[in-house]
Image 1 (cartoon, rainbow, N blue to C red):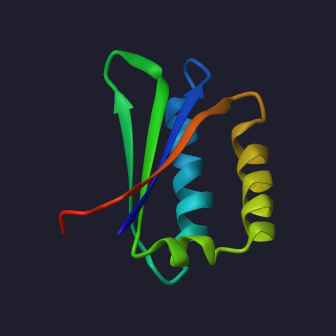
Image 2: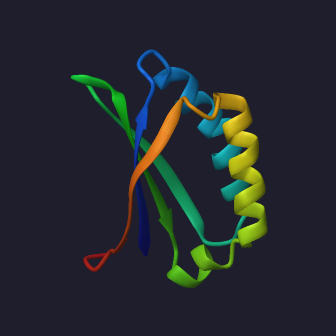
Length: 100
């Protein structure tokens, strides 16, 4: 299993909107692909401007099989829904799960 780990900064007061549209746009798109296992959204109780999204994929190959053009189009839809200045991707990482 591979973990896609994304840390965002969201505009103060926009966290709920960001999470809602993320589910409607990104989760709906990615969950249609083979190898998508689940997605979690983590929030910091003390900081309403931070959101971490963790996506679990069966394999790196499954994750990389999502077409780049689809990712770009999905990001455009998401930015239009949330507002282009409402969030910023701060960090993106990948992890390999070894203990399962």
